[in-house]
Length: 203
Ligand code: DC
Image 1 (cartoon, helix red, strand yellow):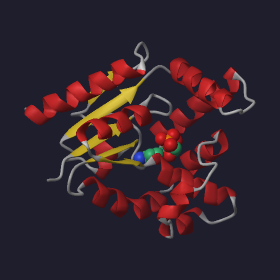
Image 2 (cartoon, rainbow, N blue to C red):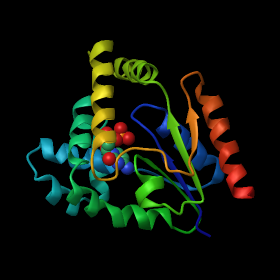
Image 3 (cartoon, rainbow, N blue to C red):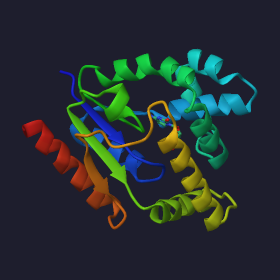
Protein backbone atom coordinates (compact mmCIF):
# COMPACT_ATOMS: atom_id res chain seq x y z
CA UNK A 1 0.00 0.00 0.00
CA UNK A 2 1.26 3.49 -0.83
CA UNK A 3 1.11 6.13 1.91
CA UNK A 4 3.01 9.38 1.40
CA UNK A 5 4.12 11.71 4.16
CA UNK A 6 5.22 15.10 2.79
CA UNK A 7 7.41 17.17 5.12
CA UNK A 8 8.31 20.67 3.93
CA UNK A 9 9.91 23.66 5.59
CA UNK A 10 12.81 26.11 5.52
CA UNK A 11 16.50 25.32 6.05
CA UNK A 12 17.50 23.98 9.48
CA UNK A 13 13.99 23.78 10.93
CA UNK A 14 14.52 20.17 12.01
CA UNK A 15 12.86 18.60 8.94
CA UNK A 16 15.65 16.10 8.39
CA UNK A 17 15.67 14.79 11.96
CA UNK A 18 11.88 14.70 12.17
CA UNK A 19 11.65 12.95 8.78
CA UNK A 20 14.13 10.23 9.72
CA UNK A 21 12.38 9.59 13.05
CA UNK A 22 8.93 9.53 11.39
CA UNK A 23 10.16 7.10 8.69
CA UNK A 24 11.64 4.81 11.36
CA UNK A 25 8.43 4.98 13.44
CA UNK A 26 6.16 3.97 10.55
CA UNK A 27 8.71 1.69 8.84
CA UNK A 28 8.61 3.81 5.65
CA UNK A 29 11.40 4.64 3.18
CA UNK A 30 12.81 8.17 3.44
CA UNK A 31 14.05 10.56 0.74
CA UNK A 32 15.80 13.82 1.64
CA UNK A 33 15.01 15.71 -1.59
CA UNK A 34 17.37 18.55 -0.62
CA UNK A 35 20.17 16.09 -1.32
CA UNK A 36 19.14 15.97 -5.01
CA UNK A 37 19.52 19.75 -5.30
CA UNK A 38 22.73 19.68 -3.25
CA UNK A 39 24.21 17.04 -5.59
CA UNK A 40 23.32 19.22 -8.61
CA UNK A 41 24.71 22.30 -6.81
CA UNK A 42 27.98 20.48 -6.06
CA UNK A 43 28.28 19.52 -9.73
CA UNK A 44 27.70 23.13 -10.76
CA UNK A 45 30.53 24.21 -8.42
CA UNK A 46 32.69 21.59 -10.15
CA UNK A 47 31.92 23.17 -13.55
CA UNK A 48 29.05 21.01 -14.82
CA UNK A 49 26.07 22.78 -16.41
CA UNK A 50 23.22 22.42 -13.82
CA UNK A 51 20.44 21.20 -16.16
CA UNK A 52 22.81 18.60 -17.61
CA UNK A 53 23.83 17.61 -14.06
CA UNK A 54 20.16 17.17 -13.03
CA UNK A 55 19.32 15.12 -16.13
CA UNK A 56 22.24 12.73 -15.59
CA UNK A 57 22.12 12.49 -11.77
CA UNK A 58 22.92 9.03 -10.38
CA UNK A 59 22.13 7.47 -6.98
CA UNK A 60 25.86 7.44 -6.16
CA UNK A 61 26.02 11.24 -6.64
CA UNK A 62 23.93 11.53 -3.46
CA UNK A 63 26.56 9.68 -1.45
CA UNK A 64 29.60 11.85 -2.14
CA UNK A 65 31.19 13.68 0.81
CA UNK A 66 30.84 17.42 1.21
CA UNK A 67 27.16 17.88 0.26
CA UNK A 68 26.38 19.31 3.73
CA UNK A 69 28.56 22.42 3.54
CA UNK A 70 27.16 26.00 3.48
CA UNK A 71 28.73 26.54 0.02
CA UNK A 72 26.90 23.55 -1.45
CA UNK A 73 23.66 24.60 0.30
CA UNK A 74 23.84 28.00 -1.40
CA UNK A 75 24.62 26.39 -4.76
CA UNK A 76 21.66 24.01 -4.24
CA UNK A 77 19.34 26.94 -3.56
CA UNK A 78 20.59 28.63 -6.76
CA UNK A 79 20.10 25.62 -9.06
CA UNK A 80 16.69 25.03 -7.41
CA UNK A 81 15.42 28.27 -8.99
CA UNK A 82 15.88 26.77 -12.49
CA UNK A 83 12.68 25.26 -13.87
CA UNK A 84 14.54 22.77 -16.04
CA UNK A 85 16.55 21.48 -13.09
CA UNK A 86 13.35 20.98 -11.05
CA UNK A 87 11.61 19.29 -13.99
CA UNK A 88 14.48 16.82 -14.40
CA UNK A 89 14.13 15.72 -10.76
CA UNK A 90 10.32 15.40 -10.62
CA UNK A 91 9.79 11.86 -11.94
CA UNK A 92 12.25 10.26 -9.53
CA UNK A 93 10.61 12.00 -6.55
CA UNK A 94 7.06 11.14 -7.67
CA UNK A 95 7.93 7.49 -8.13
CA UNK A 96 9.60 7.38 -4.73
CA UNK A 97 6.53 8.99 -3.12
CA UNK A 98 4.18 6.29 -4.40
CA UNK A 99 6.40 3.28 -3.72
CA UNK A 100 4.75 0.34 -2.01
CA UNK A 101 5.20 0.23 1.74
CA UNK A 102 5.02 3.97 2.39
CA UNK A 103 7.37 6.91 1.90
CA UNK A 104 8.47 10.05 3.72
CA UNK A 105 9.85 12.85 1.53
CA UNK A 106 11.23 16.05 2.97
CA UNK A 107 11.94 19.24 1.02
CA UNK A 108 10.34 22.53 0.02
CA UNK A 109 7.63 21.60 -2.50
CA UNK A 110 6.63 18.04 -1.62
CA UNK A 111 3.10 18.80 -0.39
CA UNK A 112 2.48 21.50 -3.00
CA UNK A 113 4.04 20.15 -6.23
CA UNK A 114 5.63 16.70 -5.97
CA UNK A 115 2.83 14.98 -4.09
CA UNK A 116 -0.24 17.22 -3.67
CA UNK A 117 -2.30 14.11 -2.85
CA UNK A 118 -0.01 12.99 -0.01
CA UNK A 119 -1.98 11.32 2.77
CA UNK A 120 -0.24 13.45 5.42
CA UNK A 121 1.50 16.82 5.05
CA UNK A 122 3.58 18.65 7.61
CA UNK A 123 5.24 22.05 7.43
CA UNK A 124 8.08 22.10 9.95
CA UNK A 125 9.37 25.58 10.70
CA UNK A 126 11.11 27.72 13.36
CA UNK A 127 12.29 31.32 13.63
CA UNK A 128 15.31 32.25 11.49
CA UNK A 129 17.33 32.98 14.66
CA UNK A 130 16.62 29.57 16.21
CA UNK A 131 17.36 27.78 12.94
CA UNK A 132 20.63 29.69 12.46
CA UNK A 133 21.75 28.88 16.01
CA UNK A 134 21.09 25.16 15.48
CA UNK A 135 22.92 25.15 12.15
CA UNK A 136 25.82 27.13 13.70
CA UNK A 137 26.26 24.56 16.49
CA UNK A 138 26.07 21.71 13.96
CA UNK A 139 28.74 23.30 11.73
CA UNK A 140 31.05 24.09 14.67
CA UNK A 141 30.73 20.50 15.86
CA UNK A 142 31.83 19.33 12.40
CA UNK A 143 34.90 21.59 12.65
CA UNK A 144 33.81 24.43 10.34
CA UNK A 145 35.15 27.87 11.22
CA UNK A 146 32.21 30.18 10.81
CA UNK A 147 30.50 33.01 12.75
CA UNK A 148 26.93 33.08 14.06
CA UNK A 149 26.28 36.21 11.97
CA UNK A 150 27.44 34.48 8.77
CA UNK A 151 25.17 31.48 9.42
CA UNK A 152 22.14 33.73 10.11
CA UNK A 153 22.81 35.73 6.94
CA UNK A 154 23.11 32.48 4.99
CA UNK A 155 19.83 31.11 6.38
CA UNK A 156 17.99 34.37 5.58
CA UNK A 157 19.42 34.56 2.06
CA UNK A 158 18.40 30.98 1.33
CA UNK A 159 14.90 31.50 2.84
CA UNK A 160 14.35 34.53 0.61
CA UNK A 161 15.50 32.72 -2.55
CA UNK A 162 13.49 29.57 -1.74
CA UNK A 163 10.30 31.51 -0.93
CA UNK A 164 10.43 34.13 -3.68
CA UNK A 165 11.25 31.93 -6.67
CA UNK A 166 8.61 31.56 -9.39
CA UNK A 167 8.80 27.75 -9.66
CA UNK A 168 7.57 25.69 -6.70
CA UNK A 169 8.29 28.31 -4.02
CA UNK A 170 8.57 27.25 -0.39
CA UNK A 171 5.17 27.63 1.28
CA UNK A 172 2.90 25.41 3.38
CA UNK A 173 0.32 23.39 1.42
CA UNK A 174 -3.21 24.49 2.32
CA UNK A 175 -3.86 21.21 4.10
CA UNK A 176 -0.47 20.97 5.85
CA UNK A 177 -0.19 20.77 9.64
CA UNK A 178 2.28 23.50 10.66
CA UNK A 179 4.72 22.55 13.43
CA UNK A 180 6.80 25.42 14.82
CA UNK A 181 9.82 23.86 16.54
CA UNK A 182 11.27 27.17 17.86
CA UNK A 183 10.52 26.24 21.48
CA UNK A 184 10.67 22.44 21.09
CA UNK A 185 13.41 19.90 21.50
CA UNK A 186 13.79 17.03 19.02
CA UNK A 187 11.69 14.58 21.06
CA UNK A 188 8.81 17.06 21.29
CA UNK A 189 8.95 17.87 17.58
CA UNK A 190 8.98 14.17 16.63
CA UNK A 191 6.09 13.37 19.01
CA UNK A 192 4.04 16.22 17.56
CA UNK A 193 4.77 15.09 13.99
CA UNK A 194 3.80 11.46 14.70
CA UNK A 195 0.58 12.56 16.43
CA UNK A 196 -0.37 14.77 13.47
CA UNK A 197 0.28 11.95 10.98
CA UNK A 198 -1.66 9.41 13.02
CA UNK A 199 -4.58 11.83 13.21
CA UNK A 200 -4.56 12.10 9.39
CA UNK A 201 -4.22 8.35 8.96
CA UNK A 202 -7.15 7.64 11.28
CA UNK A 203 -9.38 10.39 9.84
O1 DC B 1 16.83 20.91 2.56
P1 DC B 1 18.22 21.38 2.13
O2 DC B 1 18.75 22.49 2.98
O3 DC B 1 19.18 20.26 1.97
O4 DC B 1 17.98 21.99 0.65
C1 DC B 1 19.00 22.64 -0.10
C2 DC B 1 18.36 23.56 -1.14
O5 DC B 1 17.70 22.78 -2.14
C3 DC B 1 17.29 24.51 -0.61
O6 DC B 1 17.83 25.75 -0.22
C4 DC B 1 16.32 24.65 -1.75
C5 DC B 1 16.49 23.41 -2.56
N1 DC B 1 15.37 22.46 -2.44
C6 DC B 1 14.26 22.68 -3.22
O7 DC B 1 14.19 23.68 -3.93
N2 DC B 1 13.22 21.79 -3.22
C7 DC B 1 13.26 20.69 -2.44
N3 DC B 1 12.25 19.83 -2.47
C8 DC B 1 14.38 20.47 -1.60
C9 DC B 1 15.43 21.38 -1.61
